[in-house]
Image (cartoon, rainbow, N blue to C red; front, side, top):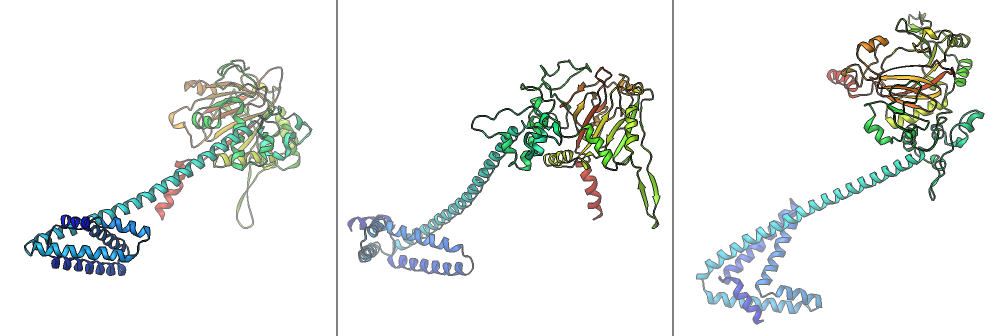
Length: 526
């Protein structure tokens, strides 16, 4: 009790008991009124009032000689409330005695000190509440940030796993990725067993690609398909998008090459491609997508119409232009006055007669009659996020009329030109020499429309030199961005083989300029 008395005398700061008692009563009354008002109007004020009352009680007990901590420990030890009341009564009695000795003169001092204590107490309470509120907001923000980072890490992990699976599946041929249920059988005929070299044996402890492909999602299969097309080059899918997509051409050789520019092709000139990774020959990796026999079947079984489904063309080098041999469509008027366009049906005999005469056959929508090409485009649309299309080009080897075509003696169906698409040339059969030139002007980069036909002399006059001068063989793939001029023809060599390639196109009219041209007029009209 002596310690309690000394602490009360030293820490009380003097002052009349009556004044202090009145102040304490007023404080309690004010706190009660504030609590009642806060309960009615501002629920959050309850926390502030409770915090003030709690702080006042703690200060009062500290002024009584540290009894507060002793009381708490006593309660924790199980001492009854009577002992606590006795301690409080004794402290109050000692405070009254000290106040009587100090007299009224000290009342004003005591009152000022008490007021200062009250103001400091309010500031402390406000600061504590502010810290709690700030800590609460910071805690919620930290938890949200932690969840966001965890989600990002989870997404990154999923992306890495998908990329790893896609790379594993890229060892399969495109046909095996498109039709997993066929397994190693491949194509639709008896030649299916000869589709491609067998895939490398799986790594110990890892499932084989053939086992995984059946359960892979469309997203993973799409990534694997593009990786499969790029596979022999050693260029990864990520590297392709970063370094080549919409930037520069890429040549993917199916056959093993010693370097990126071996110069060993029949066309001579600049190879400009990427050498194949070690592992053998992949010439048959594109088998099962489309063949010359498939085109023969289309012409026999289906009605193909000139100008809509098929073109018959020839490039005349002496004139420096392309000649299209399609019969023109007929415009007819119905009984209701509506005009319709009728396209003439292509006779199989007539088409093949012109083919033997050196003309190139271009199938405008081969996916209409080929499940393989349709599946190929469908999956690549998932990869690129836009529509994909395809044309097939069948060009004969040297013929009696070859002199009408390329200067090199082979057959050529189209004049040099550039397109408004990202083009992937898949060489399916035979061989063809390609020359690829950079865009003629800066405005032709990422061209939004296809160019007119150029003559070889015009390219020379413009000072264009081929960036690529290569001969594509079976299994090769050539990527060309939009705006890059190109021309191709078969070879006048002893093989005398025809050429069949499939051009897969993407990103036509798929850019911000096209989008804004559609959006802004409607927005202005609205």
